[in-house]
Length: 333
Image 1 (cartoon, helix red, strand yellow):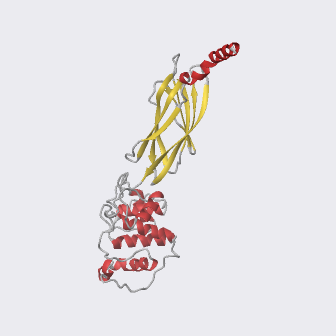
Image 2 (cartoon, rainbow, N blue to C red):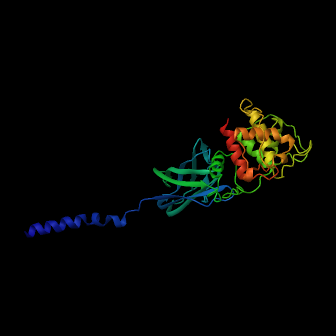
């Protein structure tokens, strides 16, 4: 019996280090990918790691939707040498290394940041696929990370709005944009230039022309190409031969005329003139040059009247109304 007890004691002493090994073992590396707040149409992702050992250099791979996001910048924020990001299809590879005979870092480490431009409305995802860590002795280990972060570009002022569905659909297609990162202002007025730009994007309008038809449309204006192309396609006219009045709020009848000219440009067989009597109580207020297009738009279901059987031709159109009629036009094509 005594010999048996002594034997068990020796066995336990010999394996004691196994019982306490977890207390001394290195903790497993943990990698984190965190998205900051969206600002000016951009978002910055912070890339970091915890419990890292001999972190001398690395190569990390990420995937994302290039239709929704565009990589603007990679910043390692670390001493040493970083290569320019390698972007191919939906993947980007970043890499950095220390220089010289120095030790690799240990502990919790900020690896770098990635800044993306949000190209359109909706939710997209960036996934950290993997990382290859290189030690100062040129030994490397590749780890599958699999961390994802969702990036959502949404308008906070559409809840309960009658045009929400159409606005969001067009925004996801990149046809319309908000007034800032989180607001669309659906009930604000829309200018003549803004509406032309919306139509040009919706129809993917590309007319080869260098003619500047209006004196009040600067060549470097953000809407200049849209106005130039729409005019060449016969979709718009000015308020005079020389002036387009791009910054003036568009009226409902002006919007209707531009809409129907756009429709005839892309689908003349769909939008043909009709002879229907307008029964609105304010029909006499519709300008003669707009009557035919208003009639056709009503017949095609692209435009509707308002309260008290009025069309309100001289009222300013809203951003929501502009979005809805463009969505209706696209549904006919």
